[in-house]
Amino acid sequence: MPIVSIILINYNTFQLTCNCIESIIQFTKGVDYEIILVDNNSTECDANLFLQKFSTVKLIKSAENGGFAKGNNLGIQQANGDFILLLNSDTYLIEDAISKTVNYYQQNKLNGIIGCKMLYPNGTLQHTARKFRTIKWELLDLFRFVFFILPYKKRAQLMLGKYFKSDFNLKCDWVNGAFFMFEKCILNELPDAQLDERFFMYGEDQLWCWQIKQLGYKVYFYANASIIHINNGSTEKKNRLTINKIMLKNEIKLMHIRLGKNFTYYILSFIYLVKENFRNFIKSIIFYSTNS
Image 1 (cartoon, rainbow, N blue to C red):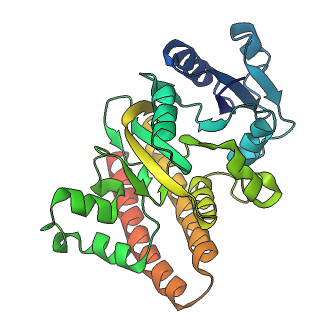
Image 2: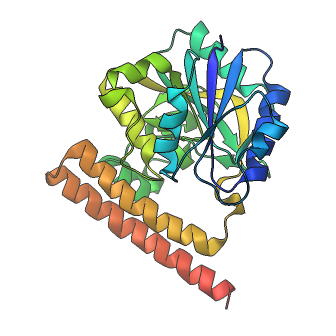
């Protein structure tokens, strides 16, 4: 029986997904695993081509592109491992990150969700351990010069995200869904014993972390295992601006879910919208000025 069920979602990313699977096979040596690949009704090529290259992979062919959450739930239904690892198809391993993360989780008797360090292909750090947005966080981010007098470690733990160099292990509010590991038994405590599917893409990882934390579990960041996550590094700048707008809308929805529609929600969403719209406006000016 596998210890880890690795769930991959493919949607018209055949080569990227193949690269990811090859890296899992190459580097994962310290733990028994299974790979469950969900094809979200891709049109790029016949999904059976995966089985020609990787005969041991479990292939699930979805009749629709139901998004990231729904695809993962399809895969989880076929999972036999004690641990579930949601792994993006645009990632690849550079070390035995899966075994290292499982061992760290078990040896330290953790209980909840765990993520690891992620890098862009050029080695630049991605900020994957984060705090939920609050009025305090937004104001400190806006007037960041105020708290830069604090020692780095205290500042990093206070803010996380771009203020944290991913250089030590810690508890956080949420981790990036590109490498998202948890014990399968946790699902039994969620509605319908599955991950929430209300977001098609972007924001579901934050939602899942919040829901699982509400059950009394914790979210951990493990700094001693690294993977490559291509992410927006291969996305055209114009598309990144569109993605930013979608993420902004989903962030507001997440605030509503966490806080309800109360005074705190309205103040927080106002500060966030003003700040992020201004930043996106500046980014769009830079984009169009450099591409005119």
